[in-house]
Length: 152
Image (cartoon, rainbow, N blue to C red):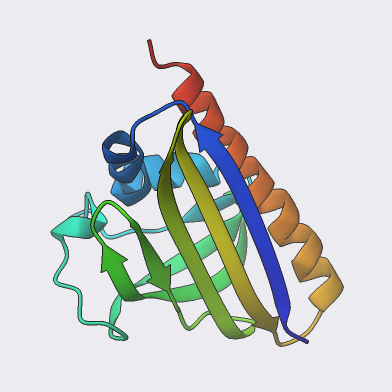
């Protein structure tokens, strides 16, 4: 069963700052917490620092629920990285026949609109996966809005 979900937030931040947040691995990790922890090689600080070959895995990450329960691995694979605009990630992942995450940034009158579009096909447990993804991405967007709210 294929699951499609969309999440959208408006951040009181300009697109350049929002771009730095969504490509900085420390910000990405903070955005994912507390629900998920993802291992990232220590040498990687920003997605833009990587030599990206579309469709070729960049590295393998371990995924941990609540930082405690191993969920499996993700071979982080970017199809596109459009500087200042967004990315398309299609990563082979434990428990998924398909994982596609597209994140776009759109300037708007209030700052920047962040849109996450997910298309996933879990191997099993589609209802549980859908519920978890709703909770996880809602949490990620709350984290982004909190970060933007702290700006002067």
